[in-house]
Length: 412
Length: 123
Image (cartoon, rainbow over the protein chains, first blue to last red):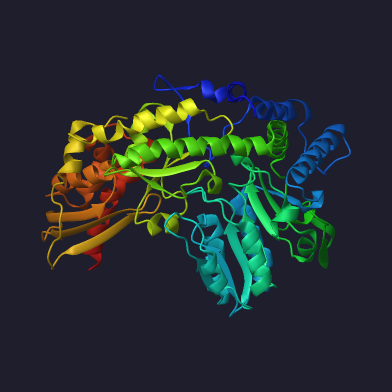
């Protein structure tokens, strides 16, 4: 296990004060903070190597190209994929749209069906919803139980020969629910063997060891900025055989084979899906983030967060017994990522978050880009505190202490 | 940002909260980011000034207080008065200090009331 105090020293922003109070950053599910090593990698690129990639024979361009290739190799190794299966995009949302616009529009036809779950982030729901409306396919939704866990029985009923694609999150960004991907994959093989499985890995890859060879999936999207990397860096992983058969998403520079006025051929993987100049510095920063996480050890990262969420749930349940808060999502740390979701009784989530901000605590409030699951629990908004490698138990103690202050503000 | 006593007061005791019988103009406005909703119903004078206004909704302290305060302020205003009053006026009512993240909460009812005038012109 790593030493959280030491880890915190790597994150310059954690020494910031918010209105005089030390920053307690509990919004890592929205975006993570960045360690010095990632910031330095970006500065190093811009100060010493900046040039466009795949464009020149000069030294800088060759260096920049090599750095992007190296980062791709790091990401591939990190999730046990083949290098050419790693496609850089801006974020998970763009990755999921890429699949919907390419594989989806070529393969999903009138009368077919797409299965999603009620836990999906809007980015893994809306692209499929729009696609289904466009082509006349049906959108089927896996239900959840009262703890926000997927009902596998519900999935089993939804699967049949019409289902061409199942899009499901690995970890809910709203409730922290860890979904049973192995069971989901097995059910698909049993009841809709031809269907592809798309995983939203935005809350998985940053927090748990991920092995795409064992996931049983065909595609997975994730964001670099949620795993210590810079914004603008995201990844779509797909099985090579499937990616090779797909049409490009965007057309332009870098993704072409041969261009003639009479027609154009496409580059091989992964360039075929990377039109135009990518976020080169972002990709290099993501490579540094992968190094950082690898150094900590992903098993340790999960262990740390499991301990934190177990600790936080224990403390929150005391507040719940006092009638102060309502907790949403799974009650067992085994089944939950480092995401604590709650409401302060009688106080709107935004108001609770605003009061906590006064103490330097950054939590997210609202619908978390997951309106259907928030509404499933009869709420219009929820408060979410999310943890990462730099989160300490002291910060959770401080959060719990300050949650007690929230109702007092509104009790005049 | 602090919650001023006046905000808490309007939040806990919202003014002009309720339904309005026909004939009236009704507008519903949602804040998709946080699920807040406000429904404004009003009657205008022949000159297009607010005569009666009622509102209902679910939302945070800021959006509730803003709706409540505005519901008092806009009586007698016409469309150009409201536009002159503007978002700055709403922020002023709330004590002059609303951070960017809460502007959608602060302006939900304002946007609904603006639409009320548009609906009146169209009908």
